[in-house]
Length: 214
Image (cartoon, rainbow, N blue to C red; front, side, top):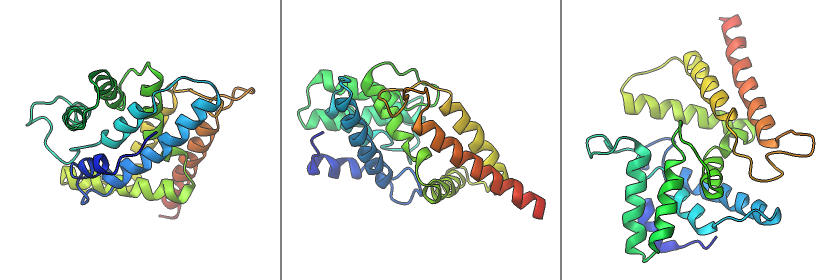
């Protein structure tokens, strides 16, 4: 995966630092997770285009703060893909790689169907934070809550937010994005799934404990 400072500068300009979660720092975190996934794929002999993974993760939430519907796009992912295509064309990236990048960005939609190894890797890298150390996972949950409130102009109780988070995580964990041994070992267990489920249980237990005290 060949990093490009000039390309990252162009991508950075398409993100809003005022957003607590879907900002350029998140994109770079996803790129870092993608680098690890690409290396695991290579170690396991899984073919993958590292540049497509890099491009897609760099732009996967570009323009998140903008009114995508008002700009004529059905989803934020479609708008991000369109932004990526424009910038990558400016940088002379070939048409096939651009098309595969757009498809990988669209694979980050909640209800997306992901088929290629690149699409699976981008999907998995975007969700990598679910299996982070618990303090990181909880801080991300808090930032997502603040961001939701900013974008919707409505406050949501923390306990209600946790219930919603649990449903979202269960949905994502039910999907099959296994690329390497990390996602399915010889015992049929996934380190990613086990860590994400442990985080979800701990977050929910905190909610239950707070309710019993209250």
